[in-house]
Image (cartoon, rainbow, N blue to C red):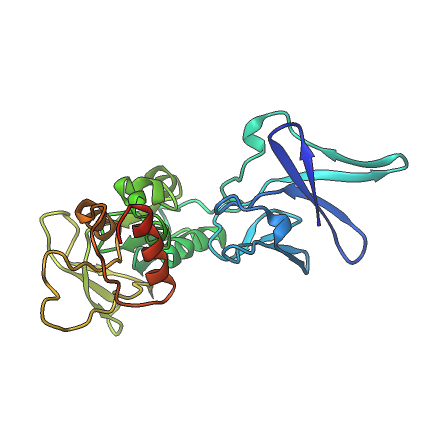
Length: 283
């Protein structure tokens, strides 16, 4: 892999396959903009070392990992006097693009219903994959959270990111509307009756959805809750658990410089939380 500077602010990545063919793509991962040259080039794919986002160098499409958007691709050819890449003048062609190639449209005549229980990255990716693979029926994503699917791992790295949760969203409402995906937020699924293919929903003043939805297929992608220790004092006002943007916002609202904090858990999330809190002046 070879990264090349183009102008003052732009870079491209040139890769060569085993059979000697050259390909030209954007140089940055579509997830967090990390340089792909620092990753791995394997079997016509480039892998970002930051979070394992993997892209097809021929099409730019994301194949694995958290990157939902495709990296840009450019025509490249070898001539007698050198290697030439056809690069765009428009700035919007230099950035990552929505991976919407082949996204099917909703067909009103298709009465099938696909229910996805959960509103995380897996649920969001599943909904997109259905459209990309030609599904034209109704797609309903049900999540008990009040947010659209968002990038949850950011919460432990940068607590103040939760001040505006919309910046964490993997896709905005316009995207889901454009591709006919219904996202039912504040919707708690209480039961999935697999025998009769019915999803039962808890009534709530926050929505007017029916209490039951009949489905043809259902994907359970609800994830899990943060594990809590059942000990005295767990419900005290200064004891927090991090799982949602609301949790992160509550922590930042309470934390003040000079406070002493005890973190229970020393895994990745615990260590990232420690770093985030220290950056806020907390001991």
